[in-house]
Image (tube, rainbow, N blue to C red; front, side, top):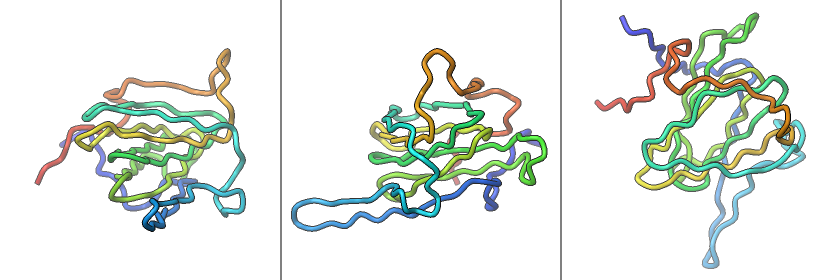
Length: 161
């Protein structure tokens, strides 16, 4: 029996998503990502870009206070979440979202939920995060684990079939 959990179709408590829609014309396109009047908007802390080359995994980390909002603007990223929060009704659940060029989606990640992503496209994945808190360089709000830490029941390998 594998120690790895299958991603759950049920969302981890506090996780929300927002389908994004690009509006195109002959000049190009525009796509709203997050608005202050969205029902899932919490607050603005900062905006940053992180990237990964094909096959690279950037995981695991979680925040005590911060809510993250991940959007893949170019390429494709597999975003994975794991709930190990004591007292959470979804403790032990794994959620997996494949987002980017072919599935424009914002994923809201609540505090204390481990998360990471893997570039699953043939070119670099560009992921924008809109966290609710600015990064504190002297006292970062984060816990980190190795991407293949056995405490998280997830295997980053591609599943063919």
